[in-house]
Length: 473
Ligand code: CTP
Image (cartoon, rainbow, N blue to C red):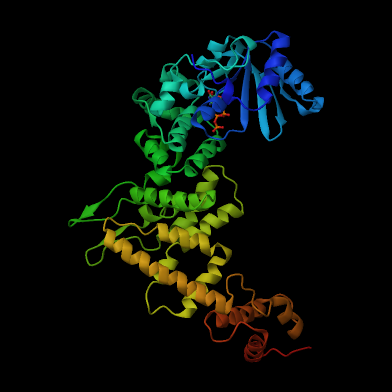
């Protein structure tokens, strides 16, 4: 039997072990920590299972560590307790047996053995335990060949997979998420059960589903997760908008790109260059308006006119449907979806400085993210075409840099604001103030006047006179 005593380097394990020894309670470190230890992935959450009173073990361990009593959070309802120590979260629970009713994720729980506890876990790789008891300290307890599955990179349930998923359908999302995060495959029977039980996801809260989607989006190759979602019918249930991107229609022998496949390429490329979750969401949703705007015209072939505007409008609806917060992150996704075609339109040599300034103004601080998205959006089967576009895209970057250095438009505040105009002409907030502000901003963006007070002031005087306004100061 494998012994991992040497791998349990942190002193906390010996302390738990001694405390449990004095209480006469066998205990084990179990679940994600053991999995990640074997995969050499960092893990800050430690789960301890005691065959006995887990809450009391938490209290006595905390006391040994000289932590105050209030440091231990007890969740009576679940029979668990946790405390933070250094930068780890350590959770304690008594070994248990669970039985589920079909309409809830909340099981009824009774005390059990370590094996009962391992049985109720989601995947063989998450059911591994290491003994902390003195007699066999460090021994790996692996009743379902989890170690072998780790080595073969396989996600498999310890029990009949249909039961595992029906008991707790969140595990459907977890299976796909682990496959994506760890780059593992899902065992055939487990995969079939995901397909059969996918409909049970309806009892899982949207917040939990989104937490898993976020982890898929942040994995090294998110397309692994989304392709599995598609294969099992989960995509249709969880992200129907993305599912609608699938497929190629052909008229007169002319087909368009499969927009799902294209989106997957973009999402994977973004995952390589950024760990900004919201940029990953933008990549996933950037073409979401395409199914609605798809047209075929014999002269031009397939078009998706205005798909960026339609897509941007869909963003709040999608966020609401997924119960995601409607905050500045959503505004960011919406804005970038809306702007995602703009940088590539600047590859033409004939592009004016004014167009570049407008893009800098509209994107503001998000210009760098928008450029990453737009660059990732360049995909084609024709590698020569991709190379050519990427070269031209480099020119766009140069143009942006030159104009930004010259005109400082990125966080541009016009040199004359509404308050100044109101005070000068003795006005309350009104249409005229808006018009004057607008004229000044547009003139600067168009390069008609420079981005400075003197030129803006001269323009203000001329325009105010046209409106019949007289200065009061
Ligand atoms: N678990 C389970 N079914 C769930 C959630 C969790 O069986 N729906 C079990 C697994 O054994 C898991 C452990 O509880 O390893 C701890 O769960 P959690 O902390 O949520 O997940 P981890 O596996 O640690 O992974 P991550 O932190 O990446 O979510």
